[in-house]
Each structure stands twice: as C-alpha cells, then as structure tokens.
Image (cartoon, rainbow, N blue to C red; front, top):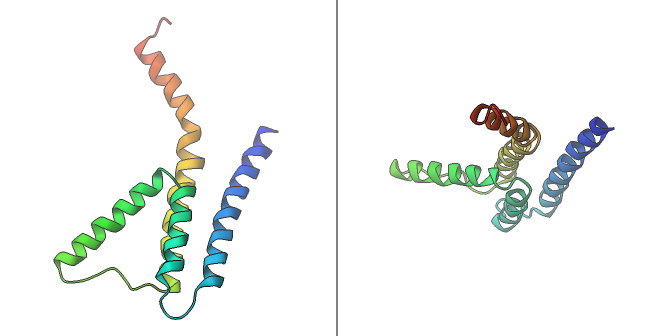
Length: 118
C-alpha cells in the first residue's frame, strides 16, 4: 500500500507540474511573453521549493557570467520557457522523490554513529 501511495504522489506532483506548463503554453501570446513565463516560474519555484532556489541562483550566476562577456540569457520564448520548466521539474523531482525519502535513514544512521550505545 505504501508503494502505491508513493507512486501516486509522484504522478500527482508531475501532473501538477505538467498542468502548470500546459496552462502557460496555452496562455503564451506572441513571440515573447515574459509575464506568462514569470507566472510559470513562480509556480515552479513553489512546487520545487527549496531546491528551486538553487535553480534560480544558477540562472542568476549564469546571467552574471554571461554579462561579463557581453552576452545574455536567451530572450523569452516558448522553447526557453519549456527548458526552464524542465530544470525546475528535475530539481524538484530529485529533491522530493530521491533526497527527502533518504533523510530519515541518513538521520538514523548518523545518530547511531554518534551515539552507538543509545
């Protein structure tokens, strides 16, 4: 039963992420619609929090490094929006479904190493 709930949680989380992308994709108007991208970005920050902060920091660092060389991040577009969404989904999935489930075991093992008799 635990396994089924675990799989359902993953499917639900991914479905919410896809729903956010589909809504943004359908709402996208014209060549560049930064407002829709910004809305999707905020939704993904919430869904992938706190790992999403690493993604945001990565974007900021990349933008700063590109600026040093007179370059910039790509302009707002549907492909750019999807690529950004993928980065947030990967970060969130790794966080929620690979790292977080291992924390209790890691915590238990680290406490046993520090206090072997108790």
